[in-house]
Length: 238
Ligand SMILES: Nc1ncnc2c1ncn2[C@@H]1O[C@H](COP(=O)(O)OP(=O)(O)O)[C@@H](O)[C@H]1O
Ligand SMILES: [Mg+2]
Image (spheres, rainbow, N blue to C red):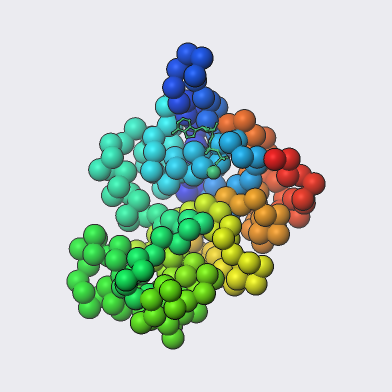
Protein backbone atom coordinates (compact mmCIF):
# COMPACT_ATOMS: atom_id res chain seq x y z
CA UNK A 1 0.00 0.00 0.00
CA UNK A 2 1.36 3.46 -0.87
CA UNK A 3 1.60 6.06 1.91
CA UNK A 4 -1.33 8.46 1.83
CA UNK A 5 0.27 10.61 4.52
CA UNK A 6 3.99 11.17 4.86
CA UNK A 7 5.18 13.76 7.36
CA UNK A 8 8.93 14.37 7.15
CA UNK A 9 10.62 16.26 9.99
CA UNK A 10 7.63 18.49 10.70
CA UNK A 11 8.05 21.35 13.18
CA UNK A 12 5.29 23.70 14.34
CA UNK A 13 6.42 26.49 16.61
CA UNK A 14 4.17 29.21 18.05
CA UNK A 15 5.64 32.51 19.25
CA UNK A 16 9.36 33.15 19.77
CA UNK A 17 11.94 33.83 22.46
CA UNK A 18 10.78 32.91 25.93
CA UNK A 19 7.15 32.56 24.80
CA UNK A 20 8.07 29.97 22.16
CA UNK A 21 5.83 26.88 22.14
CA UNK A 22 7.09 23.78 20.38
CA UNK A 23 3.72 22.27 19.41
CA UNK A 24 5.36 19.77 17.01
CA UNK A 25 9.05 19.01 17.14
CA UNK A 26 10.63 16.89 14.39
CA UNK A 27 7.59 14.72 13.74
CA UNK A 28 7.89 12.10 11.01
CA UNK A 29 4.95 9.80 10.34
CA UNK A 30 3.76 7.59 7.53
CA UNK A 31 0.17 6.38 7.24
CA UNK A 32 -0.93 4.10 4.42
CA UNK A 33 -4.06 4.21 2.34
CA UNK A 34 -6.68 2.09 4.08
CA UNK A 35 -5.14 2.47 7.53
CA UNK A 36 -7.23 3.11 10.65
CA UNK A 37 -5.24 4.97 13.36
CA UNK A 38 -5.91 6.56 16.67
CA UNK A 39 -3.79 9.41 17.96
CA UNK A 40 -3.34 9.50 21.72
CA UNK A 41 -1.27 11.37 24.28
CA UNK A 42 -1.63 13.83 27.15
CA UNK A 43 -3.41 17.14 26.80
CA UNK A 44 -1.12 19.71 25.10
CA UNK A 45 1.07 17.05 23.47
CA UNK A 46 0.40 18.25 19.91
CA UNK A 47 -2.42 15.95 18.77
CA UNK A 48 -4.73 18.67 17.43
CA UNK A 49 -1.82 20.54 15.86
CA UNK A 50 -0.81 17.33 14.08
CA UNK A 51 -4.41 16.78 12.93
CA UNK A 52 -4.56 20.36 11.62
CA UNK A 53 -1.39 19.84 9.58
CA UNK A 54 -2.51 16.40 8.34
CA UNK A 55 -5.93 17.84 7.41
CA UNK A 56 -4.39 20.76 5.47
CA UNK A 57 -6.02 23.25 7.86
CA UNK A 58 -2.65 24.64 8.90
CA UNK A 59 0.92 24.78 7.59
CA UNK A 60 3.95 23.52 9.50
CA UNK A 61 6.74 25.95 10.40
CA UNK A 62 9.24 23.61 8.77
CA UNK A 63 9.34 20.20 7.11
CA UNK A 64 7.72 18.36 4.22
CA UNK A 65 4.25 16.91 4.13
CA UNK A 66 3.40 14.62 1.25
CA UNK A 67 -0.35 14.04 1.04
CA UNK A 68 -1.50 11.67 -1.69
CA UNK A 69 1.91 12.12 -3.32
CA UNK A 70 1.96 15.95 -3.34
CA UNK A 71 4.10 18.15 -1.08
CA UNK A 72 1.44 20.35 0.51
CA UNK A 73 3.50 21.82 3.38
CA UNK A 74 3.80 25.32 1.94
CA UNK A 75 0.73 25.60 -0.30
CA UNK A 76 -1.33 28.80 0.08
CA UNK A 77 -4.76 28.90 1.73
CA UNK A 78 -6.71 28.53 -1.52
CA UNK A 79 -4.72 25.50 -2.66
CA UNK A 80 -5.13 23.88 0.78
CA UNK A 81 -8.90 24.54 0.68
CA UNK A 82 -9.18 22.77 -2.66
CA UNK A 83 -7.36 19.70 -1.31
CA UNK A 84 -9.56 19.64 1.82
CA UNK A 85 -12.72 19.92 -0.21
CA UNK A 86 -11.81 17.15 -2.65
CA UNK A 87 -9.93 14.70 -0.48
CA UNK A 88 -10.58 15.11 3.25
CA UNK A 89 -13.63 14.78 5.50
CA UNK A 90 -13.75 16.14 9.07
CA UNK A 91 -15.68 15.04 12.14
CA UNK A 92 -15.46 16.90 15.48
CA UNK A 93 -16.54 16.29 19.05
CA UNK A 94 -19.35 18.84 18.67
CA UNK A 95 -21.40 17.87 15.65
CA UNK A 96 -21.63 21.39 14.12
CA UNK A 97 -24.94 20.70 12.36
CA UNK A 98 -27.13 23.62 11.31
CA UNK A 99 -30.23 23.39 13.55
CA UNK A 100 -32.70 24.80 11.03
CA UNK A 101 -31.75 22.31 8.30
CA UNK A 102 -32.90 18.70 7.86
CA UNK A 103 -30.37 15.86 8.03
CA UNK A 104 -30.50 15.69 4.23
CA UNK A 105 -29.78 19.41 3.78
CA UNK A 106 -26.98 19.36 6.37
CA UNK A 107 -25.28 16.55 4.45
CA UNK A 108 -25.89 18.18 1.06
CA UNK A 109 -24.39 21.52 2.13
CA UNK A 110 -20.67 20.83 1.38
CA UNK A 111 -21.63 19.94 -2.20
CA UNK A 112 -23.11 23.43 -2.70
CA UNK A 113 -19.55 24.75 -2.37
CA UNK A 114 -18.22 22.19 -4.84
CA UNK A 115 -20.77 23.29 -7.45
CA UNK A 116 -22.68 20.00 -7.71
CA UNK A 117 -26.22 20.34 -9.18
CA UNK A 118 -29.18 20.11 -6.75
CA UNK A 119 -30.53 16.75 -7.94
CA UNK A 120 -27.14 15.08 -7.58
CA UNK A 121 -26.62 16.73 -4.16
CA UNK A 122 -29.88 15.20 -2.98
CA UNK A 123 -29.04 11.80 -4.40
CA UNK A 124 -25.55 11.68 -2.89
CA UNK A 125 -26.68 13.01 0.51
CA UNK A 126 -29.42 10.35 0.61
CA UNK A 127 -26.89 7.65 -0.17
CA UNK A 128 -24.45 8.91 2.50
CA UNK A 129 -27.22 8.93 5.12
CA UNK A 130 -28.13 5.35 4.16
CA UNK A 131 -24.46 4.43 4.59
CA UNK A 132 -24.54 5.62 8.22
CA UNK A 133 -27.84 3.86 8.91
CA UNK A 134 -30.04 6.97 8.81
CA UNK A 135 -31.96 6.33 5.60
CA UNK A 136 -35.20 6.75 7.57
CA UNK A 137 -34.22 10.11 9.12
CA UNK A 138 -33.68 12.27 6.04
CA UNK A 139 -36.18 14.98 6.93
CA UNK A 140 -35.45 15.17 10.68
CA UNK A 141 -33.77 18.23 12.13
CA UNK A 142 -30.82 17.78 14.53
CA UNK A 143 -33.03 18.50 17.60
CA UNK A 144 -35.18 15.49 16.63
CA UNK A 145 -32.18 13.14 16.64
CA UNK A 146 -30.13 11.54 19.45
CA UNK A 147 -26.48 12.54 19.98
CA UNK A 148 -25.29 9.36 18.24
CA UNK A 149 -27.60 10.00 15.31
CA UNK A 150 -26.40 13.62 15.05
CA UNK A 151 -22.80 12.44 14.95
CA UNK A 152 -23.77 9.97 12.21
CA UNK A 153 -25.26 12.87 10.20
CA UNK A 154 -21.94 14.69 10.67
CA UNK A 155 -20.10 11.60 9.43
CA UNK A 156 -22.41 11.41 6.39
CA UNK A 157 -21.61 15.07 5.68
CA UNK A 158 -17.88 14.30 5.99
CA UNK A 159 -18.01 11.45 3.43
CA UNK A 160 -20.39 12.97 0.91
CA UNK A 161 -17.58 14.33 -1.27
CA UNK A 162 -16.05 10.80 -1.24
CA UNK A 163 -12.82 11.72 0.59
CA UNK A 164 -9.68 9.59 0.70
CA UNK A 165 -9.19 10.53 4.33
CA UNK A 166 -11.55 10.93 7.27
CA UNK A 167 -10.16 12.90 10.24
CA UNK A 168 -11.97 12.87 13.56
CA UNK A 169 -10.92 14.86 16.65
CA UNK A 170 -12.53 13.25 19.74
CA UNK A 171 -15.60 12.08 17.74
CA UNK A 172 -17.04 10.15 20.69
CA UNK A 173 -16.12 12.73 23.34
CA UNK A 174 -19.72 13.91 23.72
CA UNK A 175 -21.36 10.47 23.47
CA UNK A 176 -22.35 7.76 25.96
CA UNK A 177 -21.12 4.16 25.72
CA UNK A 178 -23.97 2.85 23.56
CA UNK A 179 -23.86 5.65 21.00
CA UNK A 180 -20.05 5.51 21.00
CA UNK A 181 -20.32 1.89 19.83
CA UNK A 182 -22.86 2.92 17.19
CA UNK A 183 -20.50 5.58 15.83
CA UNK A 184 -17.41 3.34 16.00
CA UNK A 185 -19.26 0.71 13.97
CA UNK A 186 -19.75 3.30 11.22
CA UNK A 187 -16.04 4.27 11.21
CA UNK A 188 -15.07 0.58 10.95
CA UNK A 189 -17.45 0.05 8.01
CA UNK A 190 -16.16 3.12 6.19
CA UNK A 191 -12.60 1.93 6.73
CA UNK A 192 -13.51 -1.52 5.39
CA UNK A 193 -14.84 0.31 2.32
CA UNK A 194 -11.35 1.79 1.78
CA UNK A 195 -11.40 5.19 3.50
CA UNK A 196 -8.32 5.97 5.59
CA UNK A 197 -9.45 6.98 9.10
CA UNK A 198 -7.47 8.88 11.74
CA UNK A 199 -9.01 9.86 15.06
CA UNK A 200 -7.84 11.58 18.21
CA UNK A 201 -9.22 9.92 21.31
CA UNK A 202 -8.66 9.83 25.06
CA UNK A 203 -10.64 6.61 25.45
CA UNK A 204 -8.71 3.32 25.46
CA UNK A 205 -11.93 1.44 24.55
CA UNK A 206 -12.21 3.58 21.41
CA UNK A 207 -8.51 3.26 20.48
CA UNK A 208 -8.80 -0.50 20.86
CA UNK A 209 -11.29 -0.55 17.97
CA UNK A 210 -8.73 0.99 15.58
CA UNK A 211 -5.80 -0.82 13.95
CA UNK A 212 -2.88 1.28 15.13
CA UNK A 213 -2.12 3.83 17.84
CA UNK A 214 0.26 6.80 17.39
CA UNK A 215 1.36 8.17 20.75
CA UNK A 216 2.35 11.84 21.27
CA UNK A 217 4.19 13.50 24.14
CA UNK A 218 5.56 17.07 24.31
CA UNK A 219 5.15 17.62 20.56
CA UNK A 220 6.96 14.44 19.61
CA UNK A 221 5.85 10.96 18.58
CA UNK A 222 7.03 8.51 21.21
CA UNK A 223 5.45 5.45 19.56
CA UNK A 224 4.19 5.45 15.96
CA UNK A 225 3.12 1.81 15.85
CA UNK A 226 1.60 0.97 19.19
CA UNK A 227 -0.66 -2.06 19.13
CA UNK A 228 -4.22 -1.06 20.15
CA UNK A 229 -4.50 -3.92 22.63
CA UNK A 230 -1.52 -2.43 24.51
CA UNK A 231 -3.58 0.68 25.36
CA UNK A 232 -5.14 0.58 28.79
CA UNK A 233 -6.25 3.16 31.32
CA UNK A 234 -2.84 2.81 32.98
CA UNK A 235 -1.06 4.18 29.90
CA UNK A 236 -2.99 7.44 30.09
CA UNK A 237 -0.93 9.85 32.12
CA UNK A 238 -2.78 13.16 31.92
N1 LIG B 1 -2.60 28.88 18.14
C1 LIG B 1 -1.73 28.59 19.13
N2 LIG B 1 -0.91 29.54 19.65
C2 LIG B 1 -0.03 29.26 20.62
N3 LIG B 1 0.14 28.03 21.15
C3 LIG B 1 -0.65 27.03 20.68
C4 LIG B 1 -1.62 27.26 19.65
N4 LIG B 1 -2.25 26.08 19.38
C5 LIG B 1 -1.70 25.18 20.21
N5 LIG B 1 -0.74 25.74 20.99
C6 LIG B 1 0.09 25.05 21.99
O1 LIG B 1 0.72 23.96 21.35
C7 LIG B 1 0.78 22.83 22.21
C8 LIG B 1 0.07 21.66 21.56
O2 LIG B 1 -1.33 21.94 21.51
P1 LIG B 1 -2.41 20.93 20.87
O3 LIG B 1 -1.93 20.48 19.56
O4 LIG B 1 -3.72 21.62 20.94
O5 LIG B 1 -2.36 19.71 21.93
P2 LIG B 1 -3.43 18.54 22.18
O6 LIG B 1 -4.40 18.52 21.06
O7 LIG B 1 -2.59 17.30 22.27
O8 LIG B 1 -4.08 18.84 23.49
C9 LIG B 1 0.16 23.28 23.54
O9 LIG B 1 1.19 23.69 24.38
C10 LIG B 1 -0.72 24.44 23.11
O10 LIG B 1 -0.89 25.33 24.20
MG1 LIG C 1 -6.55 18.65 21.14
